[in-house]
Every structure is written in structure tokens, then in C-alpha cells.
Length: 209
Image (cartoon, rainbow, N blue to C red; front, side, top):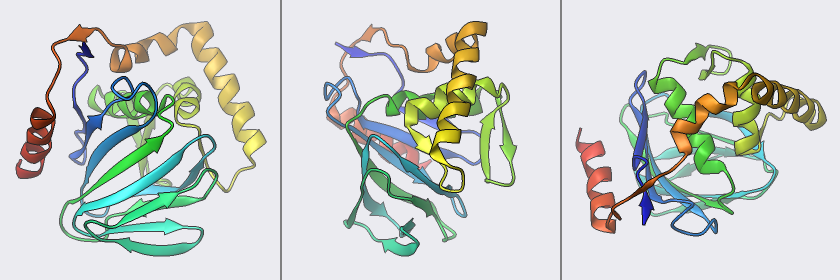
């Protein structure tokens, strides 16, 4: 039995969509696989992860990936692996949507990280921060919970400071009970299994829509 969580999550502000092709549950935590449909002039600022390896694969259009200070254009069918602790970011410099797959090994709690971020956006519980060109939670304590899920760090701030700050935020989120408000985005209940064909159809409808 599979969870009843949606196969796709989205940001209503820029129409970015993530479709889960293989969930953490389906791979027993070995890996997570999802497709991102990224709108023009959007992406993620420079960051790194401490406990996972990311592999990007181009699907439609050209994705600009920055790794270790160098820019690489990822074309359809090409793959690029980002090792643990390697500083990276990505951007869509074109005027069209770009689609690419991302594999996360091990899956850890990265799926929850993704679902919570988009869930907050959808529910109007985040706000846009121009300096990083990203949405962040209106409840700042939830930053600690979410960043710990993704093992997500910025290269411009010493890691020990970030870990300490996020640990305090996460602890306060647990103490106030605000972390419980995130559970609806990633906690599962059982539902009828979804076929691989249905997953691909969902991704295709997203691109056509």
C-alpha cells in the first residue's frame, strides 16, 4: 500500500511543480526521485547538503548548474552528480520552462523537506525574501525544522552557527507545537497504489498545462 500524499506539489506564485517519481516509502529510503518543472528566471541559490548526494538529469531545456564556482549547462539526457558538502545551485536562464529529474541518495527526510516548503507556499504560510529570491516560512521557527529535514546549509555562514541556530529554532518549534502544523504535508495514510504509467501521465499533464 502506498501513501495518499499527492504525487505533485507546486508553488502557486511562480507555477513551479515537483512530481515525485519514486518516493522515500517506495524505495525503503534508499533514494528519492522527483521531476522539477522550473519556470524562467528561477532556481536555487548556492547551498550544500551534509548527508546526501544529488544527481541531476536534464529532461527538457537547458538547466544552468553552478558547482564549485563553475557553471555547467545540463542538457536533456545529461547527468551531473553533486557530492556531499559540495557547494551548488541551479537556475533556468531561458524564457521557457525547464524540466529535470533529481535523485537524492539516501532519501533521508528530503521528501518531507520538499513537501513542507511547497505546502507552506500553497497555504500562504510563507513570504518572499528578495535577497535570496526564495520564499521562507512566516513562522521563523519552522526554518529550523525544515532546514534540518533537508540538511541544507549556506556557504557564506559557518556551519556550526547555522546548525546551532536551526537547532534552537527547531527546539522552539517543538516546544510551541508549531512543528506539528507541518505534519499534514508529509505524514501518510494508506491508499490504492499508483502505477508508473499514472505517474508519467501526471508529469506530462503538468508540462502541457
